[in-house]
Length: 169
Image 1 (tube, helix red, strand yellow):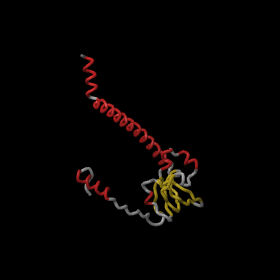
Image 2 (cartoon, rainbow, N blue to C red):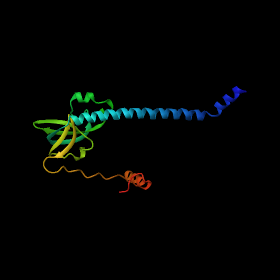
Image 3 (cartoon, helix red, strand yellow):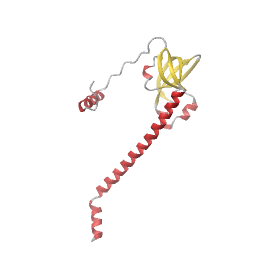
Image 4 (cartoon, one colour):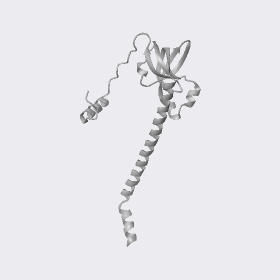
């Protein structure tokens, strides 16, 4: 009689077993993402400290700026070899500059890429091959006007305001 009940319970509720297995897998994935996120955050903080320690202000003439893949950017081969495999196909903000008599390609911070003026001389904060900040040398640096928001983005912001998730402007 006891054998019959266990077999009957397993036969009746296979959906429950599948649900438990799926929940355990989701929980394991969430824990793994949390641990990997903490490690990445720690590594990024260390790199930011190192960049802050090595930054210097340089006067440069901006020749061109584009978003392009790192293979097409004209950066040295050693830099390309050191980048992670996943980053090699992503487009990076590349700025072609003239520092003194030398023309070189530098990687810009994504936050300041749009505010970098073309064909103007600027004072930039540089750490290695990375532009961290830009200040105008002659006159002000013009900030690009903000892009128009699409229909979906406007609708999402309106819904967030109504729900109280975002402060009303």
